[in-house]
Length: 263
Length: 263
View (tube, each protein chain N blue to C red):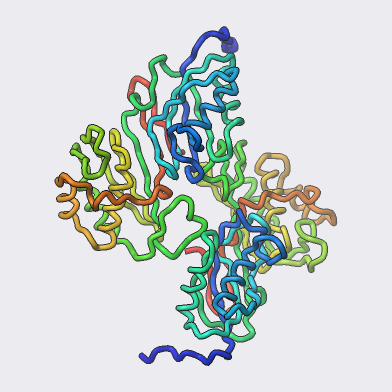
């Protein structure tokens, strides 16, 4: 096979890639002046490979401060001469230890991960036992035994196309389709997997706050149904801590390609 | 039932407990002046509950800097008035986020975890795939595909009672009994579990360094057999990085009680 032809320097190529990060030491995905963000690190690394020219690196989900990702998807334009494989390796080599890039490949010129995403999967991890230092960064510790069967039943109330205003920010179109809410236990480890076409800001963590109340026996399925129908924030807007949340997978639309996510 | 009688202030009671820690930010278990150690944190917390009187907190294994533990066992003497349950809760509350204490209970006066331990189990974790920020603290990343079947065969060569000088420090009795070496793969995750009556200093990490060479196809079973028989350090004393290592479980002798370890 002939080697990939190096494009001339001025040609702009669009790429997409999967990004994993430990969100602990980031002020979230989205770049903001004066703080450390995942987007900021990605754009800085890309600029170093682009003669210092800074270009936007778009993400499929704007994860909050402290939220992790295994399968964030990014899209960006690159004007340099490296091949896709070289660019993937070079970017990964320039990134700090808490962000990694992989599966970099060409994308259509108009590719934007937010609009190309068909659905997203988040996992919330609870360590349902005594304080565990080795799970400190990636799980919420809850000592009292959670009733995961009740949580699973309450979660299924949220499935389907609903107005999720009680679980989200007020300035967005609040109608979303939640494909599934799964609550599983393996020993002391409890995982809550939520899949939806898209999420309102803070939505997963607000859903988890409600499901934890159910697990503690303080709310039931009916109360969750009422909370969903109410015009006020559920639990007064209570939100589960960021550290337990991870964007596991973003599945792109048929036109733009396959799933990106957890191995 | 009658409540536990509070012992008089001057009575010294012996306790044992299980300790979990994220070793990343510790200079190992053993207290040393001027650096942060697990033993130092435990002794400081105990002293705060003992009118400032400092007493030794002994561990079953002196894990190195960066090595983690799920099931370290400690023994110590306490002269205060708290019940066992109160003491366990109070100590845990005083410890930093990266150390936790649990399952605290009374022990015989002569109890010392190092001598009471019947065997220890260590796990070494390898992330056999692209760089993974979420596993950065607790697994060694190895990109090239490891031959785990070959590693398992080579590991079995080490099982039994041997002179482990090629895998340990020179100043200890080098004869140890390795009960088992198990190498398992689950997707990109490779775990190496080693169980022995006791370990020489640095022994697990030196064994892992050799097994990784086998996994990469650079050594075989026969070479491991020769390394074990040799009078020189295996691989010139090469050692796998600390961050992948975790003391999972310490099983105490029949007289002093049951296993302490991973849930």
